[in-house]
Length: 151
Image (cartoon, rainbow, N blue to C red; front, side):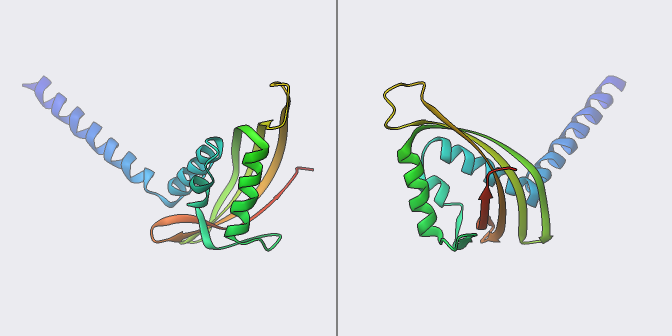
């Protein structure tokens, strides 16, 4: 009987821990990180619409580009680079308000240029991004971005 009770306690503890883990995945920080991961995956798949679905209609970047202009910019990058691999590192993520997040992200981009006759002609770049997200209808959308080369 003692083993049975210990087993029930272990199952109850495991269930409680798994439910606590589920709650963490719904935290605003986890949601923003999932959005960043989804954008990275969409970019590696060269999906303009996959990236664009995470961009707010109110988007503006540091050069006053709107969401449509950003989509055109991304499309051009995808045309130029037939293969894209990204490494992202979130160096800072803060929430000035419950519905706004600000992230500093370093992205290493490696792509194969489209017009390259040699398959080993790779283009590599590193950028630092300052990105602002806003919660819109329970989804985190990018409302602002600024990027520059480190240094």
